Image 1 (cartoon, helix red, strand yellow):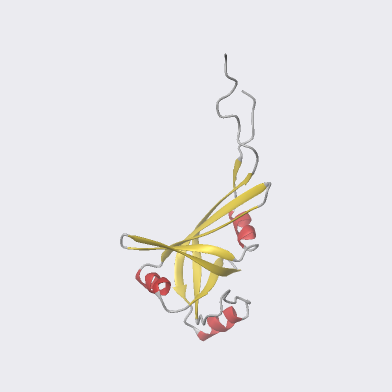
Image 2 (cartoon, one colour):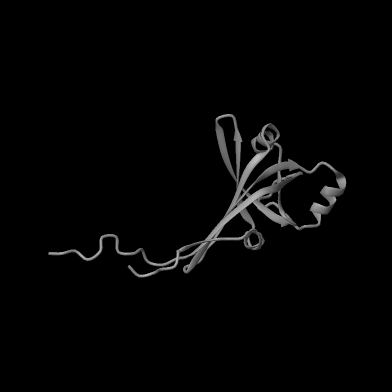
Length: 145
């Protein structure tokens, strides 16, 4: 069997952050008791954390019950793809200086709703994978007749 490179490449933390900076939409996963929820959020990277805005509701409530979250972002083209998962802790910004700083990062809601609360997800770990997209290998090989 010929040596073939691994089609999936692990990303370093810096490569993960670089990719996170190129996107605007991610998925926040919360966990309260036996309930897992996933929320699409638009976001901005701030240093080595992610910021999003939200209104009062289930997302914000769940973060007050359990601040441990997953945040996932991915992207693809016809030739390659990648996925990054940030494990971390989420907390609303409550100091006016932090909110004022966050206001300057240009994060705006995608839909016309009022979202007063900034939430910062601070990473405890990152994992990412990248791969080239190509045709599926022959699943059955050459058949003898």
